[in-house]
Length: 276
Image (cartoon, rainbow, N blue to C red; front, side, top):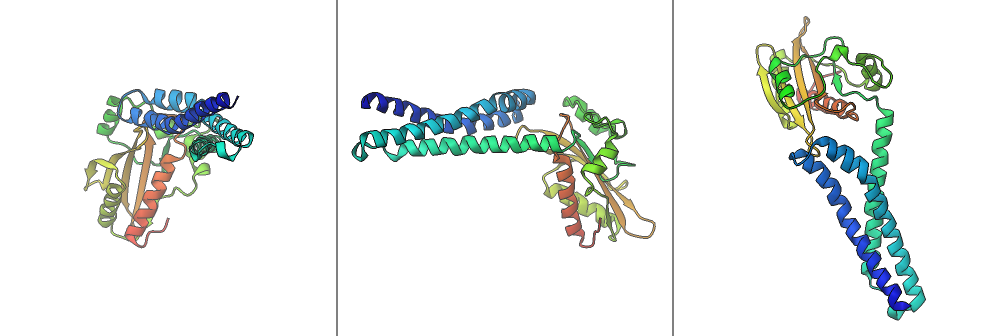
């Protein structure tokens, strides 16, 4: 009986250890495989992450719990002298932590998706958003972007309300940046901040005081395009407006708003006197 239980324990501990190793590798592969073109992002995100991913996490938690339970039963059934080493406990705890953490994170993502409107185009000026150049529009088309750059025509697919109205309600903090700095200085500062943030700047116009570029996520390699416009104010100073829009996907889970908020905070800090 003890040999059978010992064998069962070894198998379960081995499975728990394997699951604790495989689970993070699986999700890393889903994201990096999409980023480096091994498969389409829909397969990496929808199939691997949201399709099979939860099952892998639940299996990891289950194997960890059973491995711990069997280890405890074995110790009490056959005494301290025959107690298993700490390896079984470590494998069980690791599987529980890794699987549980993954499920906790996934629940947070689902909560965010339910809370935020399913939109993907955010701007500081909803009445007159900065426009992308023809070159950027063409680049998006060549790269297979499924989302248009026509801000005015977009709606929230969940509520069918106009995008400007939905954005203002969901992200009231996204506002134009108004500064007392000279427009040329504001433009150079904005361009510097964009590069500090890692945006790949593709178009610049000192004359029009605008530039555009692309931000790419580490996981899955999602590309969001950004355009920044600086306008001289009649009473001095300048207004900086920015826009960030995803190439694919209905909902950005707040990524574009977070990007513009971070850009605004960095730029205000750089300028020293910006108030939005």
